[in-house]
Amino acid sequence: MPLQSTIRTNNTAIALVFLVLLPALVSSFVLPVTFAQPQTTCSTTTSLAQSSSNNNDNNHDGGTTTTAAAPMMKWFQHEITITAPSRGCHLITSQVQKAIANDLSQIKIGMCNLFIQHTSASLTINENADPDVRRDLEMALNKIVPAEWNRDGTFRHTMEGDDDMPGHVKSSLMGPSLNVPIRNGRLALGTWQGIYLNEHRDQGGWGGGHARQIVITLQGQA
Image (cartoon, rainbow, N blue to C red):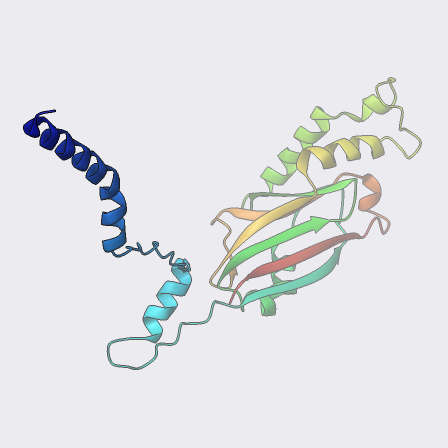
């Protein structure tokens, strides 16, 4: 074989060996590199109220700020007994105000609830000036629920008299309770508004009649 061909063949073989061994040679000289893993930071979410408190506690002057206390909530309850002088609608605003005057004066903003504990009497709010309004309201209720229904077969609950079942219906129509706002220690009634006790039975008037219990609940901020 000629000398040049032999040299060329040997060079090719050497090149092949070098290519095979190159990766191993490189890896032996290159230092291993490690990559830092990302760190997870846990944070706590602070509510708006807490954040505001913290901001107030750490002011620029280095002092602390005290948050004002919430207004005090007050509750009172009374029970009054009223016997109407006759069947009909009766103004009782003054009796209610007299019973709750001391406690009412302690409430700046709130609500007064009146609840009558009976099924043949009711409460409502209407005009406090002309007594004809109360007379006309009683007449209207008698036409809406006539006593004749107790005798013509309309009603079955008739054993307690002609005024009994009509009284139950009227009580449901008018309602057993009222809510009156409290403002600056007073009932926030309109100028011409008054609280009515509606007595729907004849026995609630002459001869002693029915004593009607009314529960009055006051609640609000001082």
